[in-house]
Length: 161
Image 1 (cartoon, rainbow, N blue to C red):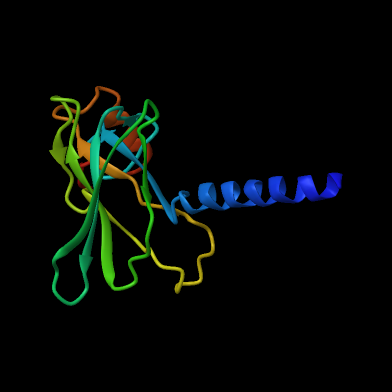
Image 2: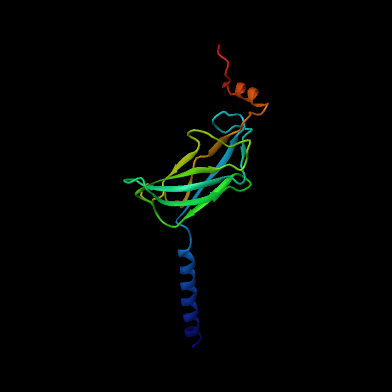
């Protein structure tokens, strides 16, 4: 008789677990936003990651170019954003794009660093639901004083021989 009482309780528990599981996102898009303090065009050891930078995940239909989905995100204290998405976008081209810098001294958009493509379908051989996007960056208005020496060490200074 006791086992008959346990059976309905177990069924209710299974339904509750299933309901919670369906609320989980299909994809978590994650990346970072940085301030290029040397205006080098890439991350360096003096790069500053930006808290409060706004980004947007945009998925455009492959055929029409129309935005099918747009979800906004904001970076945390480590410059990291996470955007959750419930459905697949097999026929869309999806990119995370810069929207707004929280810093007036670092708000110039870097060409080619203002967006990062992400694949949001399971048909590409990626089983994990986390999709890592390339870092997005803004240029600092005036490079840090240490940048000249840093770029020399990287053999990237502007001097011609």
